[in-house]
Image (tube, rainbow, N blue to C red; front, side, top):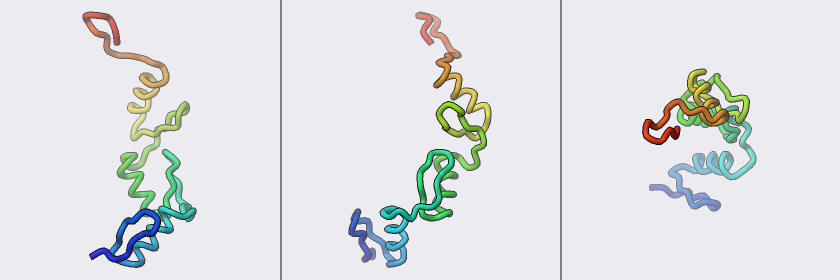
Length: 99
């Protein structure tokens, strides 16, 4: 039974402490941990770690110098730069020469 409801977004919680944590991390400026890959702010270090692991695939050390997007390895980064920023197409249609 969820009996603690957020006045700002109507999300419900079973514990008052969970509601307080939600308000502090979602609706206030207490987001002191920022993702170095995408800039999304978090109120808890554990939430930031969960975000990085889930969204960015864990530790990512290859970062695009043009747009800041990060990748888990340099091969993915090279492919991103070639396709997105250099417009390199590796495959060409055998019928119309478009890539």
